[in-house]
Each structure stands twice: as C-alpha cells, then as structure tokens.
Image 1 (cartoon, rainbow, N blue to C red):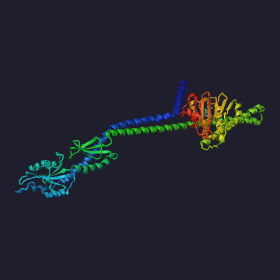
Image 2: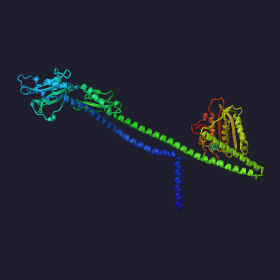
Image 3: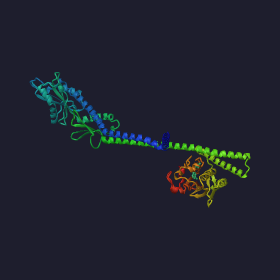
Image 4: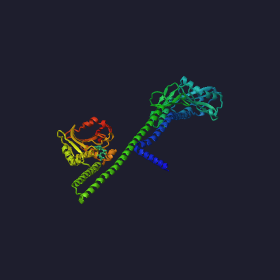
Length: 598
Ligand code: ADP
C-alpha cells in the first residue's frame, strides 16, 4: 500500500516536471510540433517532384508528338481532300478507244471538258496538272499525257524533260491497267503519290468509268513553297497557342528533309532543329515536322520546374517557420508579461497592506495616549513617517507608470541646477536613511555643473527610485555613494551601493517593466518591478540615458546621463567604448546600460 502511494507520487512528480518543462520550453515545443510535419511535407514534396521531374520530359514529349500529329493530320487531310476534288476529272473526258482511221491522239482526251473541270477546281497547292490515258484507233496502245498550266488555264504548257518523265512514271501503273483493260480492285482506286523525283512530287488519281474501269489518270505536281508557307505555316500559327497556351511564343516548329536541310521554322532558333520529330505521311514523306522549345530542352525545362517548385516550397516553409517563431515568441513574451503582472499585483498588495496595518496600529496607540515613553513615541512617529514616505513613493510610481503606459505622462522642462535638485532631494531622505544606519557619501563636482533643461520633479523621482533601490538591495553593507559629474557634455548622477549586485544576464532586463531579478536575495525585498522602467522613461524623455554597472555580491552603480544645455547630443563615452550588442554582457561583471534603450 505504502509503495503504491509512493509510485503514484512519483508519477505525479514526473507529470508535474513534464508540464513545467513544456511550459518553460513552450517556444521550442511549438516549433518542433510545427517543424516536424512541415519537414515531412517538404520531404514528400521533394519525392513527388523528383518523380515528376523524371516523367515530365516524357509526358511533355508525348504532348509535343500529339501536337505534331494534329498539325500533320490537318495539313495532309486538307491536301488529300483538295487533290481528290481537283483531280476528279469526269470519266467522259477520256476516249481511250477512238475508232477513227486517221487516229488523232489529241482527241483521246476532251480538253475542253478537262479545262472546265480544272478551272472550276483551282488549288494553289498544285503547280502543274496533267491528264493521261492510253488510246488507239482500235486498241489502246498510245500513252498520252497532256499537261495543264493552272496559271494560264490552258493546255499550252511545254513540260521539261524531268516533268514529263515524272508524270509518266507516276501514271505508269494506271496506264498499264488501262492498256490491259484489267478490272481494278476497287480498294486500290485511290490517290497515289510519286516522290521519286523530289523536285517533281506528284499526286495521281485514277479516273474510273461507270463500269469501274480505269479510263485515265489525272495528276498534280505539288508546290513546295505554297505547301509550307500558305498551308503548313498557317496551321502551325493557328494550333500553337491552343496546344501551348502559356509558352507558345517559345515553341519552335521546323520542317526539314532527310538531307538535313532546314526548309521552314516558325521563328529563329539556335542548335538542334527539333526535340521531337515526326515524318510526313502521304506527301513529302522524306520530310519531318519537328518541334522544340526555343530556350531550353525538355529535360532542362523539367529541371527548372523542379527547382522552382522545390525552392518555392522551401521558401514557404521558412516563412511559415519564421512566422511561427515570431508568434510563439510574442506568445511567450505575453505569458511572461502576464506572469510579471500577476507578481506585480501580489507584490504591490503586500507592500501596501503590511505598512498600512502597522501605521494603523501605531497611530491607534498614539491616539489612545497609552504610550508614555517619549522615546517610543518618537520611534512610532518615525516609523509612520518612513512607511508613509515609502507608500507615497510606491503610489507615485504606480501613478507615473499608468501615465507612461497610457502616453499621458507630461514633463515641465525648465533650466535647473542638477546639484540643487539632488541635494534638496537627499536632504529629505538623509535623516531617515542615517537613522536606518545608512551612510550617504554625496560627492559634489569640483567645478559647478553646467545648467540642464529638465523637469526637476521627474528627475528627483528618478533619483529617489535609484536611491530607494540602493537602500533596498544593499544587504548588510550600509554605504551609498551619490556622485555628480560631467562627461562629454552630459551631466551625470551616479548612485552606487555595495550591495547584492545584479548578474550579467539580468543587467539588460532590470529596466523592463515588472521585471524583478528572480533570486532569493531579491525575493526577500519588497518591490513592484516598476522603479527602473520609470527611471529609464524619464531619462530618455530628457534625451539622456541610464546605465548600469554591477558585479554580483559587490555592488551596483546606476548612472543617469542628462545632456547639458548647449551641448550636442553626444553619447556618453562609457557606452561608446563598451557598447555591447543587445543583451551581451560586458567583462568583469560590468554592464553598460545601453540595454536600457531596449
Ligand atoms: P523593484 O521594485 O523590484 O525594486 P525596480 O524596477 O526598481 O523594481 O528594479 C528592478 C529589479 O532590479 C529589482 O527587482 C532588483 O532585482 C534589481 N535591482 C534594482 N536596483 C538594484 C540594486 N541597486 N542592486 C541590486 N539589484 C537591483
């Protein structure tokens, strides 16, 4: 039973420790809680992006391939349709058996009918047309090919030897079919292409009569320039933005042939003519249609995509973490401040209640006249006076603080002699301090101090706060030094004690509102944590500054620096030489009060 209780206590202790740890390290715990999922997210994103990086070029190439197929399909289908229409010469225009004893082979083709057909079906893509047949007086034995010039719209065209040869070669199979009168396979009656002579590329259409017999051929010579510039380029221009909406200006489309000759490109480029290429089907079948990006290859593009995305993710994560750190810091500050405020309320209530109770009791004793001993009466009166003074000082501080916080604290600046202000203030405290066993060494300057423009009441209050602290934190040592001086155009008021001192890390913080050093020596002393923050505010309102030098166990010196009248605002020398970074302690346990500006 006993051990069971012990175990329970141990568990509770551990829980309490854990809670305390989490409370104290809330910032780090919060950060870790956010950073771990964030890093996991980043890692997953990295994985998927690298996978994407390896597959993206293929996907992009497939997209490009589909684009090329679309362009080719559009141009070639258009050409096929046009060729079918243009070359669809009526079968009645061919008389391949012409039973005329004076066989006139020119009459084997009805030129008028063919001309009419070609004139009605003009197509810019055909640079030369021809019709051909086989005819003879009794049997078809003469091969006849007549050329038609689509520009002059006449049969008065003298073909070159190559053209004639190309036309004959292209039509040869069909001619043979006419000659042998062989019935064609209906499936084979379609457009054929002959590109053996690359300068004379020809599409041929067999003309069949109503009995499905081939009676003639019609053919056209392809115009390369028109094909590329009027048809292909137009299709590229029209389809490009649709297929590559964001980057169409960067897309290079090229046409080249097997000899490595570049025949077309939609824009200037350097390097390889294509990243992905497709051979032309049907016509120009030794040509390729190619595509690439002007700036970079697909692999480069996907690398850039990867790096852009991953950098953006990292940046977002960093911004997020930064934001969270700031939020957590603000939250932790707010928590600390609220804790300080709570301590302040309890400290102040305690500080008010205890002396007030004593004052009431001593006052009652004196009122009832029960105390006859004059020494005792004097002692009680003195206690009441001291405590009332302290309470006044505390209440003044609280009122001042509330004015400072609400921005209502005002100052009445006028020319004054600091020596007068300080010695007058000291006088009101001297007797009381000496009666409490304190020895005050007031070191006046050798030469009279220059006049300063100050709010004497406020400076006196700042000085009282320093003096009050020197008394409170003097410990067993009862000696306080007040030294007036001049330094680099500043009048200085230094208050030194040989008391408990302030640790390096606390020197910068003692000027923060509600801040009280958290050691047991300070805990035994009553305080609100407002005194020094008010000193700092008052001094800075005078364009001066307050500095602190301290060594634990040896004592502390606070110095108020006030700009002397007519002096330029020069920083005190002490800080110029030893100015630390924010919160950085100086050597030998001394601290500059530059932190007081924080
Ligand atoms: P408090 O009412 O607590 O004295 P202050 O703002 O005047 O508030 O001082 C803030 C803290 O600075 C004190 O709680 C104390 O820890 C430290 N401190 C101030 N003056 C001295 C001093 N002369 N010697 C040692 N510590 C001091």
